[in-house]
Length: 122
Image (cartoon, rainbow, N blue to C red; front, side):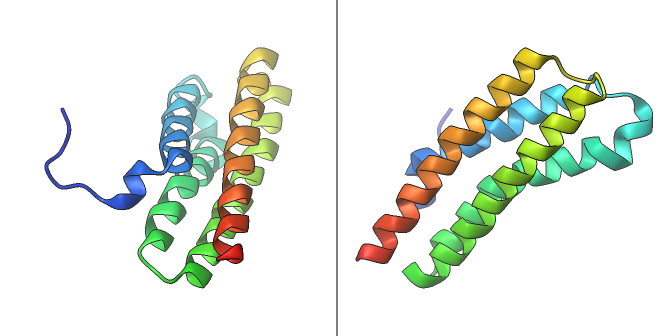
């Protein structure tokens, strides 16, 4: 069901992808061991969610400020690469899950970079 209260940033494909990635990460960490709850699990969720949250937060501002938030989203996406790698090394996710994470992060990063370039060229 679609809300009757709509925000423009919700139309951004990069935001939609970031939301999907955050939910994917949330599902993955369910399988992490309990001793990681306040460590890698929490960090992975925060970094993944930060991508969409920064896009949403910065979208209502000036183009220059939005670019700053998009750069933070880009940084968070790259943090997710390192966390996903750590999770694979520690045996919490499979190689294929890590590859899928990397694929999604690559797509989100490219979309973020393209949006940054577009905003800077205005």
